[in-house]
Length: 113
Image (tube, rainbow, N blue to C red; front, side, top):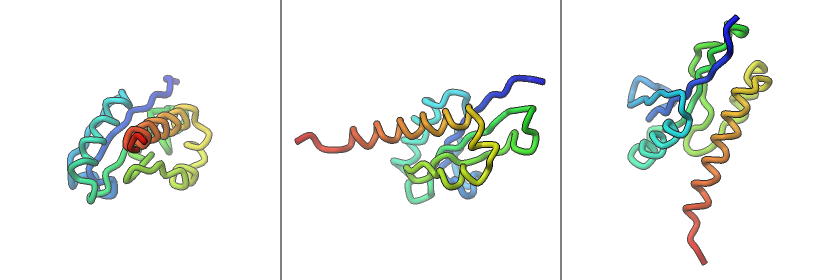
């Protein structure tokens, strides 16, 4: 069997991805930058970041678009619904990385006193 990989996407509308722009890449930083631009212009549309797991060992969960964050918040409850995602190291690393990116953005927004 092949090795598992993960790709990411940013969507202007996570609920209905086809209603807006979608940027897909294996580079999470690139997707995060696209998300920030989308959020700045279209935050009312429910912008977010998601992942696509490519894992031949998990055919029922592979190749499906699945959200990590919507509206600037990681949706752990949604990820926790799928045991395969909770236990998958690539998914958990992605969640951790997105949390760090969002936290970094929040810190940069706070005014200096």
